[in-house]
Image (tube, rainbow, N blue to C red; front, side, top):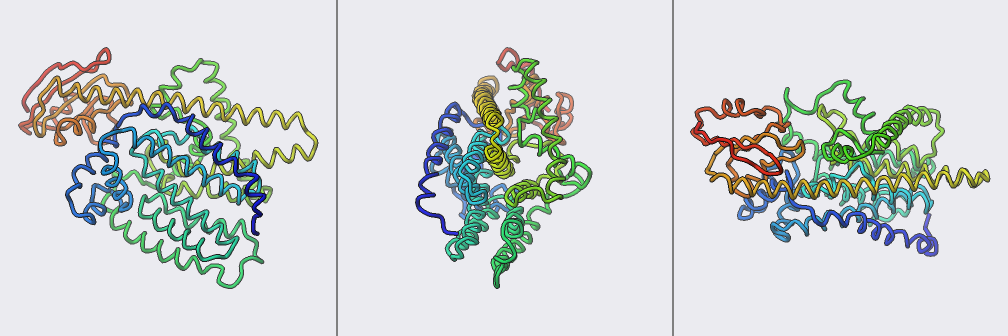
Length: 488
């Protein structure tokens, strides 16, 4: 159905409102520095700067087939150099663009301005996906989400209007998403779910499934290419394993997409400053959220959910396809794309309950609903502000300590450093390699990398007879101290 210009203009104010809110909410992040994988991306851009273009995008340090991501890394490196601020601003802008697309998709799915605004606000300020924005190198997650949303929006508009331009947009987003990151494997299933759930059979005329010929060919080609890349990294030590953790991961994601996950080290630092009473309330709410999952499943099976709510719930699970077999802890970066659909579900549910209460004349309960929703958003924004402060502090500390290593020791090729006493979420390996020497080996007793030494003795044994220098450092009183130096 064609939307009137009047109806469109009536809701147009929401978009600049979302952008203004986002700009204010992420203002503290402008002080962020590089950290962890950010230095890896910088190193790749530096190393491949003089290499042939296609060699770079195909083989530039990718464990998976991500040529467009590599091209974006090289482009950002050429544009922004080694200055963190433009990378931070670019991430924030990308998140705001994605938020706008969430609003536009919600508007078409739920046909209500309130549902669209609520979904957009929740996605904008959701605490669950903070790493996707705050961690500079997570731009790949922002980009793949952008392309997935473009494809979904183009597909929805194509089904509404039947114009080939929208289908071309959907296919373009489809291709770009697959060339960016493997999390896009859920995309064809999201589009199929839309057609099967949101559209009635009478609307499925001749040629209705023709777009899936294109989608299917592209998907099959991608799987064939990606499998050749990724199989090199599969095996007994792979993080992808079948098991009951697939089901437990669904439950985990359902809870932690709604609220901050205390298992993340940055979140744990934020939680450490909260009063005990607040934490008790947090765990009560977490338990209540966990119980809603089987309730939603029952309502869906009994066909008690509207088509729009059913679609947004199912695609929330489908968007987790890549992550469910993980045998490792959930990362907040993985939550970014799935949080799109949990925001759609929550926004649609809020709108449905709101208008139901209004129809029934339950004004008091309407106010309670609005107050509860407002408090939830305020809690998310507060959490975002705190986590940004933590990220800025850790990234600044990482840079300062990495530079301090160079003041304490004179590093040569293949030298080894072991550091004890670092905070759990401060890691210096990539920073030291970036600032000083890319061939040095840095280990610490807070490392969680599998197969790497986590004690001085283990480090000494790991590099024994390597003829390298081993430097033993300790973090104490916010500074590094050189304890010893030996030749291996």
